[in-house]
Image 1 (cartoon, each protein chain N blue to C red):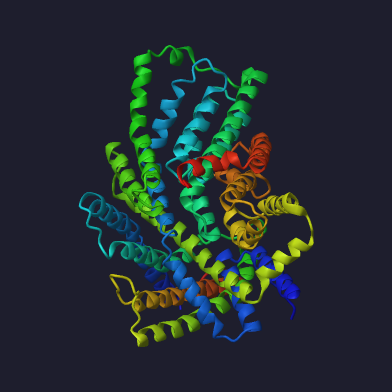
Image 2 (cartoon, helix red, strand yellow):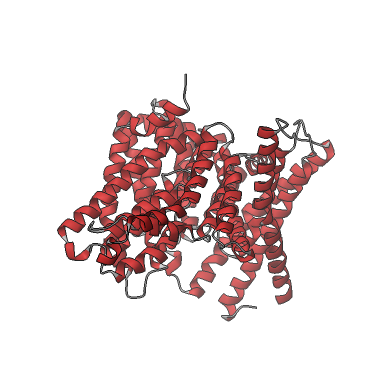
Length: 166
Length: 440
């Protein structure tokens, strides 16, 4: 069990660290595009879309790591004052709505991705790349967020039941 | 089920989940999913998913990671130290000169950095020890840093304006310009307060030492050289937006490279700085993006259930009049501001308020500035005052939370005054964007 939990952590940390490079990539692509457009009057067809994709990769793959590091904002006026054990118990309760959201989203996104692949959907822009890889990435991101949240849930259950982490 | 009950159910369940400490992003989404399963066919979820997906590819959202990365690198590049030094050589015989210098340095830093928190931590570490060492009253020292740090929300580039602009569907460029003069107004009021404090309590606001005052003019000017590069960067980023060379997102991208350049010139650039900035950027941007995704689902579901129309009609039925409605919204913001931060308030209220505001014939850009001023109030108002939390994280042990709250109170009062001025006098915010962007 402990190993599975650690595996989820490690995968999400490294995916997030890798994805963090995309903000810098985005900045360089923008600079490249501005130079081509303003100095050589030859705008690229792909830069604007590529930068948007780079940032989408950033948010989608960064989501699970942000959850692991507990950086998603919450109203902590009350939560902050709870004892660690009570907090774990409350987190176990709120895992229910959390998993409801993620499971339904995963189901709907799965249908959304399958449709897109079957249609061979593209972005309909001058560059016109296929769009399904980005949609698939959203599905992967939702699954990883769900797994990371579930890992936290398992740890919280242990903390409430045994007083220690697995 | 009637829309009244649905609305009450949404508010109650959302507040319930938030109080239990479920992150806002999941709270919004969970309520949306619950609403869809309760009212509609599950297939509606696919439509909500497509709204979320479109948001992930939103062109304006892109400027958030870029501005955050720019701020992250600048913050680690030693620019704040230079600013503080360059501003304070002019303090001279002025009582409370260092506190005024802190506010001015904050305002200048705000023109490069768009997030609150970063500034307070940076200047708290630089300016607070300096002021306490020279015998400044802790009230003056704490207050000027905590309040000055908030100027980052009003002075462009501001992440608050980007997020508001996306939610409200108005131009980020116009919002940036509209925030400039209200930002000056607020900074000016803060400085007047410091002067008044120095006049009333001369012992708590000392003048600079004789040695510092007798620094030859040439040496004073030499410190100004270090200002050139950061100011050039700020001017470049904002100038390229208004000259039409680049969109705000593109300007932010160029700003990142500029920030790296500044760090290299200051010999502060290394892998650790870059890595820390990148990691911070992905976490802040993912946090904001997933909030946007959650907001997309709940706004989509609520609109489908006829909710936005219902709220508009309910508010109209209250017959508060134009300004009454506005005052009512302001009170909701101030109330929520005691418990929530600006992001939560924005996602909960702006999508609902905005159609009403447009209906009443108010300007959405000016409304954005009023929102931002309100967030400045919320940012200083206890018990949930983010500025005080940031401050506490870097102050010496013996300074209590209570002392910080008391120190920020005068600035809170001044912010309320400034908010009133900005509200009753829309031209203050709107003349600059009208002059530069709304050419007809």
